[in-house]
Length: 109
Image (cartoon, rainbow, N blue to C red):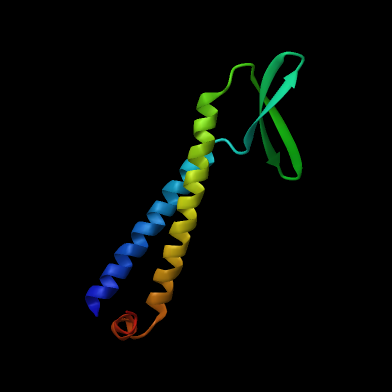
């Protein structure tokens, strides 16, 4: 029983630390998406995102911004990872609340 509680505590600490690191990385990455506007024969790229209730368009240039595209994809991946971490944290907290951990785990196939 003590071993399971130790494992749950270690898992909880791991996921809380992972959540903190992912949230810190998420703050560094750009929000929104890239929008390509055609004016005449030229293409112009903008980063479009929301700032509270306003939609903001930030000019990026005439060249396709590969680094920002990569950062936006990374942001989406991190958001998915955070969702999975939150699900795991929720499950661990539910298990910790149960009084008889060993008994409840043996019921699940």
